[in-house]
Length: 436
Image 1 (tube, one colour):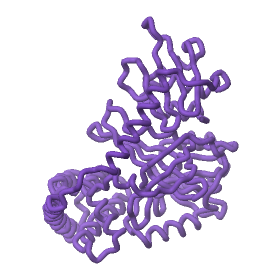
Image 2 (image 1 turned 90 degrees about the vertical axis):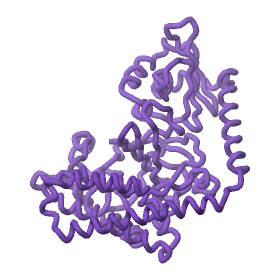
Image 3 (image 1 turned 90 degrees about the horizontal axis):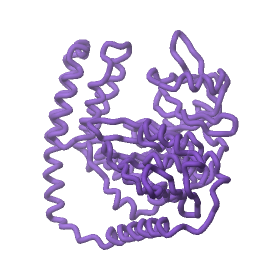
Image 4 (image 1 turned 120 degrees about the horizontal axis):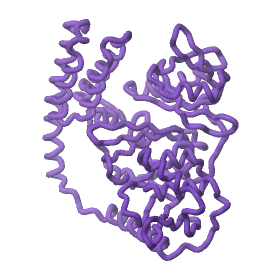
C-alpha cells in the first residue's frame, strides 16, 4: 500500500479528525503496529487502561477501532495511516493478531453471505411490480406534460423578467417534479434556481438547462422509439434508479484506476461525493458516486484522490457510459506516468463522439498533456501547445495553488467540464500526480 500524507488526510471525515490524526501520527503514541497483505493495524494508548485497537482492511480501505467514536475513519484510523505514510519502514510485516484476523474473517464472511443472498433472492412478484411501474409511469407522464407547458410559456413570454422571479419560479416547479416522482428533473430545476440572475451570461446558462429539461420531457413521451441505452439515459435523468445489486452480478472492466479527484456537495444532510477515475490500461474515464447521510458511516470507503486501485468497475447502462460502481477493489502501487490527450483538438473530437451518442451528457473528465494558465481581460484560460484555449470555470477555487505549482509553465492536467468551460482537478508535477 502506497499512500501520501495528502491522500490520507483526504479520507478524514472532518477537520477535527485531521488535526487529531496528525497528533497521533507519532511512534510514541502506538504501543504496537504491524501489517500483512490484507490489513494494517496498531494499538494506540489513550486515556484508558487498555490501548485502542485500530485496524484497516487495506483491500477495501475499511476501518475499525475499539474507541467510542462514530466517525469513519476515527482519529486513530487517520493517525495510524498518517504514521504509516510517514514512516513505512517502522512497520513490520508479520502474522495478524487474533483481533485483526477475526475482523477480516467476519468481513469476508459477510461479503460472501451477501453475494449468496443476491443469487438466492426470492422470486419477484412480476404482476405487482408491473402495476407499480405503470402507476409511476402515469404519474411521471402527467408531471412532464405540465413541465413542457411551463417551458413553452417561458419561451413564449420571454425571459427578460426572470431576474425578478427566476428562483421562486424554478423552486415551485421543482416541488411539482418531486410530487410527480421525477426527482432527477427536480434537481435540475433547483440548479436553475441557484443561477445568479444578475450576472453576465445568465441567459445562456438558463436556456441550456431549460433545453435539457424540455428534451428530456419530450423524449420520455417517446421512449419506445429510442434505443435501449438511450431509454436508460432518459429514465436516469428523470429520476429512475438502477439496482446496484443487479449491476454487481454483471461482469465489469478490471484495470488499475488512478483516482483523479473528488468533489463533495451537501444538501439536507445528504452528502454526495463524486470520484473521477482513469483506467491506466483501458484509458477509460469513470465517475463513481457515493451517497451518505451526515454523521453516518459510509457503505464503502473510497480510495483517496491521487492513489491507485486495482478494481473491477461495472458501468451503468448508457449510450455513453461514464458512471460506474466498484464491484471489487484492492490497493495498487502509485503510477506516476501521464497518459492522455495531446490538446483541446483531441478533447473536442472525443466530446463530439460522446455528444453524437448522448446529446444531454454531463461533465466529462479528460487528461491533457500540457496546459498553461493565461489571462485575458480579467478572465483565466487554459491554453494547450497548439495555442488553443478553453475558459477556466469562474468559480474555480484552487487557482492560486495551481499558479504556485505551475509557475506559469505548462503542466499535464486532469480537467472536468464540457463544451467550452473546464476546471482542473489535478496536475502531474515533478513526476507525481498532485490533487488540486
